[in-house]
Image 1 (cartoon, one colour):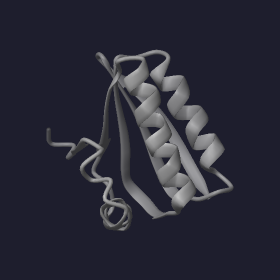
Image 2 (cartoon, rainbow, N blue to C red):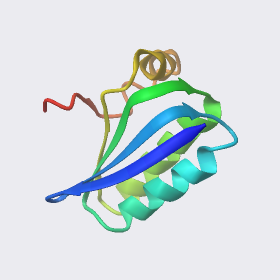
Image 3 (cartoon, rainbow, N blue to C red):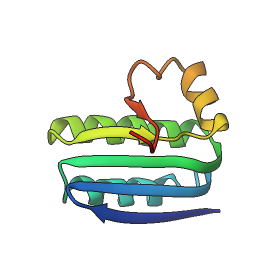
Image 4 (tube, helix red, strand yellow):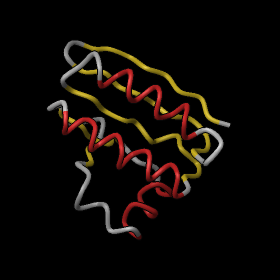
Length: 104
């Protein structure tokens, strides 16, 4: 199960995911991200509370990055959980994504 929260603070929109990002919920995750890209120039995807992500979730993040680049939206992943970070590193996508901590 996945819970998604979207917050705005100044010029930044943050989409926070809680739970598991898998094939069943990836379309909902994409819808939330796509909607955020439409309304901001600075998007952060918070992944600290994601306990599991599969290839469809990673594909959604790559699609989101490409979409953000197309619309010149500054895009970053925030605080990926150890599980998410491991998958990103295994797929060698840590060079593709800008990864930040919430302290930045």
